[in-house]
Image (cartoon, rainbow, N blue to C red; front, side):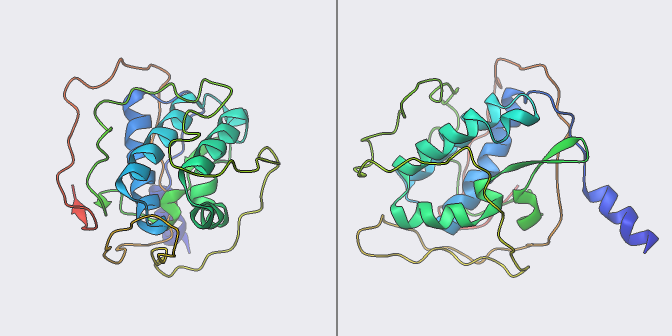
Length: 227
């Protein structure tokens, strides 16, 4: 029992509740968006937009109250214009996507690592906007993505109210099936290293202007990329 507790402590890194740096937000947004693209069956345009939305959310969060505050509500509004109704409905049932940050023992952590413990495993190459996007599209009252994906105006209601996280088993998730009227998907490989373990990274409050030499993705869509 003592060994198990020691292992759990080693695998869970507490994060001080300070603003993320540009590189931290970029890295976490990439990992989360890659997993969303795999499970929700996103096409390339959706993948780009989802990365932008996730980056804006991560880069805007400054304290525990921001986790489910206005930035989280704006993220859901933006995603409702990018995802199909089926994809959005599925997204809201997956707690590690719907609430990608939680507060635990005085620190926050990224919940997607409970599902995908191997932070070096990717299903897609980097989104095309990974190098160029610097953030800021969540600073408007209305969604930047409204009307850009030929979606009917969604009904936004009760985004502030907390939603209970459903119970998930430890089996690897399956990609979303393709339905008529949806978007073009990709062939995916099964997920690997889906161990249930919390994984977080230390953060600092200093925000650099951005990386001078950002990393480009190189793997084809739908294949595992090991970095």
